[in-house]
Image (cartoon, rainbow, N blue to C red; front, top):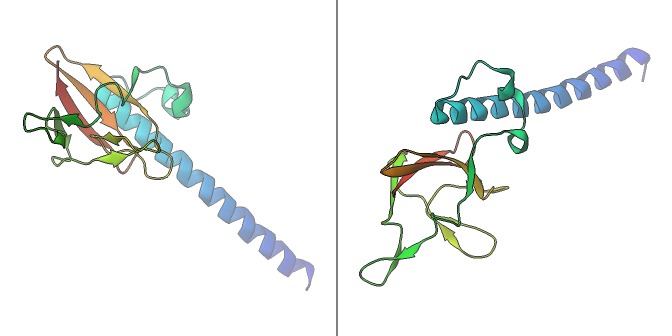
Length: 139
């Protein structure tokens, strides 16, 4: 192998690594933009570049209000949760076996989700771009 071939291989590897991290960064920015719009915040801020764990928006553990509950017929259901976007119910199972009435990330689910209290109901934004779900619960 000559020097030119080795440099081409290094350039290719470097490009692949850069593309991988650029994709993650773009997904993070898009997710934060969706959350900021959900919360009614200005999306044109440098805060949007911060990882989720360093964001200062209000978060709530999904186990507080989004667990599957017993309905009037005695069955476990998500009737207390109104799916807004998408408009169909998604049930996620977390590592403890508990079922959550919201779409959580399959790979690395976060039990903390952004929420907004709107007086008569509370909206929750579950999941991560592109698989996020907006649900509501009446207060």
